Length: 291
Image (cartoon, rainbow, N blue to C red; front, side):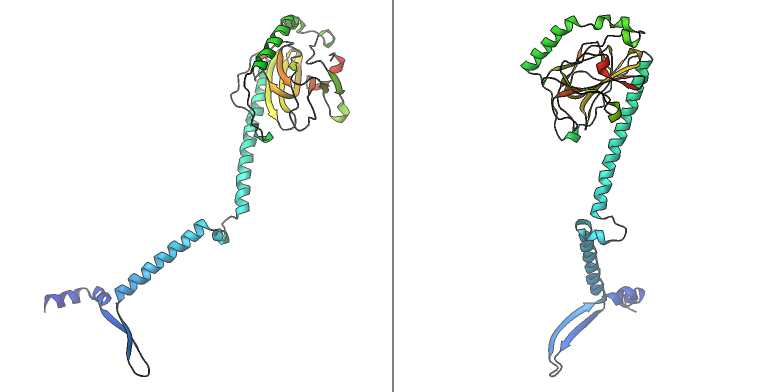
């Protein structure tokens, strides 16, 4: 037995794959040979294997980069995926707002116990108003600050420590701004403050000594600043054009804290919405302050 015959008997399966076959096409009338092809089983497997790989690759590309993938059972549609992204963004915003509200409540508790709250480095997301708010110092800004400093020389804030523990009738409130009252306090209409129209870019001043517990942007009331005072007093200043204080700052009565403006959806012109609260109950500011 020769070596070649021995190898053929040893690997009969592979040998069958290599065996050549001829595919011939004849003319049925003349029996003339038109075309022929020599093939082996290995060639056929290679051709079909390559074709299958190309088909799989083509289908994968179509599924990955075309809308055809949405027809696959269990795959979310485009609208569903967009809603998933929107819900994720809303959830992230809600988590951030909850953190800020929790910090705000902690600041209130800290102020009530007489301590100074920590400064917050986290700010509210102001992209809801679709505006990029930038603050740059200018010559007019410097002149305004000098004017405010001159006015604050005569502030009554230095004597306000004596008001600690007094009755409401004995406490002197500093007017946050001078102007015309256009919408008074109306508790039955859920209007818990007083709207005062004043000149644009006029300053807003603190009504009493206290600590800033909120200095943020809201969609309806714009730039808002809130101050916690002694004797459980709370004052709120809304629709400002610019805030001059940050959360945690201690302010004196009559000290400038903001610039009057018309920010927020509920504002129709430059004015200040001022609220006065005590022990969680709103008070009519005009009964205690002359605007």
